[in-house]
Every structure is written in structure tokens, then in C-alpha cells.
Image (tube, rainbow, N blue to C red; front, side):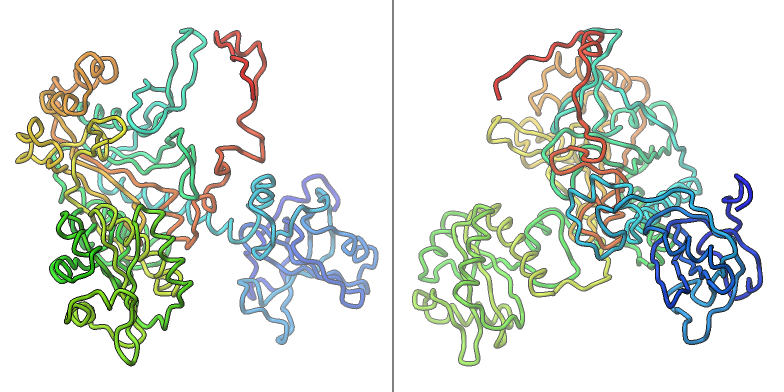
Length: 594
């Protein structure tokens, strides 16, 4: 090409169509595919907008075709040419540009590409470690670009929706006071105030409450949050929240706003109609029917209480559990065929990971019920169990007898495990559900004290406040979680807006007045200056986009994630710093034996 500006494109690689036939264009992008058909060179040129086939014909310009033949995969090139129509038998219906090709008249190699660590395509066999080390290459893959663009559309929809609902987007500080309550804070040392530290926010909770005191009655923010905790596929040290707070509102009002947001996000960002309102259920009901407080309601296999059927069954495990105020519960998996002894043993070992001591499996065969425990049961008990679940040949009943919490955890996890293993989860289905009426407090056995189930600013139900001093474990919270396909995507609560109630809750949590003043004095003082009733909710943006995209890990929708050990393989962080930097901060690193 003739001049230094000739690479400036006139069209993207996804623009040209049949109507552009005969037009002169300049395209720029990456060489995705390269084919030599008897001297005629074809390349697929790719950018984030699409793919265009470019043809180099040696009979028209041999030198140009020879240069094209030497191009490496993923090299960056600019091509000048004329849009032409493909022959009818070469039209590609899977491409938006599939009816045209660009016949090249000029080519400029803008930057060559060295040997690739993996192929830039969705079906490559690169390890997760290699993908993260070369994340800038991984992000070129079509599925990754699709995920990042989906995340963009979700974020833009959120902003448009809240702006239409008269919310104000307000940024809150990234450097804040450390108020550890739950996960560990990431600490940032102060150079000016030696020996003092900022914390990176685990959430903007206190700031958004202060914004309510300030009179901004509808606030939102798409904000980075940080937690120094052990990681899993669904956790990152830094993550993104859609943070929301409202004044003069109750639970129903917040739920209505959130359902409108979810409907807009699915409709505008993913082209999916999500019917509203969403179903609701109480925390206790969720534990009873699904074994956890994040119920996946896309499939059946609901858990049933069985104490009244087996309390005097003759089977010692059942009888002892019922008489000891334990819980015998079960669910069926329909038409799973006969399960082998090894399969049952493996499932038993699986639920032991959740504290259960054993698993009872009753299988229905053509000749009737079959299980090692049947010989211990009183007459009629087996029939009562199979009738309870309307079992047919090919069905299996899974029963756990243990303390209520253990029974719920074991069956809840087993239910999900079997649904996935036997293909009972419908594809492309989104089933949101609200979970309400959570306990306000959890009992921490290790610390022998109550802790906040959500956070210490959640309001108890007004009718339960009097029991905070006498029976804290029975107090219910004005809290609500939004669950989607078995994953919590948002959680929130109505807040304590009066100092006396907040102080009472701190006292119940074992936070004395001096500690409360040191950690939260600024908030307590603000509550004395006309704080309005308020409440809010926070979405996990990463998790929401992961579910919409059909991925299983939030790393697939984050541009530059960390590993499960909170390490960035690409830029090798965290890393050591110079002694001079440490001296400026007044920090000494203690030498320890490895």
C-alpha cells in the first residue's frame, strides 16, 4: 500500500454484504485461516465484528498472491480490494458476509505473528493455565469475544434501566476503612500515615447507606469489590457487583424493581423473555424441598419429609433418627434404570462428604421394590414409601436419615449431582426464584457466638426484635435472595436505619460499644441525623453473565481473571517489590523458613 495511513479501514470484517458488490474497500484484521487452491490464495480475515473471505489471484497479481501465501496465522494485515459475489455453490450461510468475498488488489503486513501457543479457535485443547498465561490470545477466540460482548450488553442495559427508573449512578471509594466481618480484607498501606492501612471494599455497603442519609433516594453502581478468601470456580479475589439502594421502600418494592431489571437484561442483552413476577418461597421451605437456600427449580426431584412414615418402621436407623428429633427425607429419580452396587456405593461416599453417615436406596423393579433394608421394615412401610412417590419400575428412591441440617445438605447436593449425571436439567431454561424469611443470625460453633447470616446491617423483622435478647436464633431477617438456576445471583435486605436497633444487633453479635464505635462509628453517627428507612440489593454481575452465557465458571466472562490461587499467570502478580518501596511505606518483610 502506498502510504502510512493506508491501513485505516473503510469497513470492518463484518460489514460487507451483497449490496456492496463492486465497491472498493480497505479491511484490517487478523489472518484466521489460510488456503492455497492451485495457486489461488484464500484467507479468512477476522476482527471482532466478523469474518470476510479475501481472494488473491495470481493471474491478476502474482507477486501479491505470493506475499499472501507467506502470511502466518494471526498476523495483522490490511487488505485493499473490490467486493465481489461468491459463486452460488460457495455461499456460506453461517456467516453474515457469506455471500461476498473481497478480491485483493493490495496487501500490507502490519505485524507478523510468532508461533502460537494454541490455535485461536473454540475447540482447541489448551490447558486453563496456558489460556490464562496468554489471555490476550484467548480473548480472540469467538466464544470469549461473545462472552465479553454479552457482558457489555448486560452492563449497558443495567445503566439504561436504572436511569429510566430515576436512579443516580454514584461512585464510592476504592480506599476505605477496614471493617472485617466475614471474609478477610485486602489491605493497602498508607505512605503518608505510616502504620495505617486502607482496605479495598468487600462491598460499598456502608457508603450506599450513607448516600441514603444524604438524600439520594435511588442509587446504583457497577462496582469492583474485593475479598481475600479461598477461591473456587465461582469466586475471584476481585469481582463486580451491580449495587443498588433505595429509600422509603419495602421488600415488595425492591423485588418489583429487580424483576423489571432482570426482564430487561434478558430481553435486551440475550433476546430471552423472562416472565414476571418470579415465584417466591421461604428459607425453611427451600431447605425442606430442595436441601439448600439456592434452589434449582428447573426440574422435579423435590425432597419429601418421611418421619411420619418411618418413625416406627423397624429399621433402627430410621427409628432412632425420628425419636432423636432428626430428619428422614428422600426424593426419587425417575426412570434411571437399575443402579449397580458400585453406583450406590459411590453415591453413598459422595454424600458422606456433606456429613451424612449413610444412604438408603430403594429401587422399583418389575417384580416390586428392592433394597437391602426391606427385610428390616415392618409390613406396609415399603409400600407406603413407594406409594408416597408414585414409584414405577425404573425409578429409584434416595433416603437420608440424620440431623436436619445434615439431611438437607446431603440430599440437596445429591439431587443436583444426580440431575446433572442423568441429564435431567433442561438446556436453555432460566428459572428465577426469590428466597425470603432468612434467619437473621447463624451460630458459629468455633467462636461460640452468633454471626450475621447476611451482614450486620440487616434489619430484623419488626415483630421479632423483642426476641433478640432472649432467643436470637429465632429472629427472622428482612432479607431476600434472588436465585437463578440454583445459583444466588443477588442478595439484599432492608437495613437498620435507627441507631438503637443497630446497636442492639451489634450487642447480640458480641460487638461491644467500643468496637462498634471504632469500626462503624461514622455510620452510627449518621443514623442519628434523620436517616430514612432504606434497603437494597447487590447482584453478582460475573455470575449473572456466566449463567446467561451458559458457562460454568466466572473466569469465562471476566477479561483478565486470576487462577484459583489468586495468581495472574499473564502478568505474574502478585509479585515482590523493591526494598525502597517497602521503606517508603514503613514496612518490613519478616524472613520465614519455607
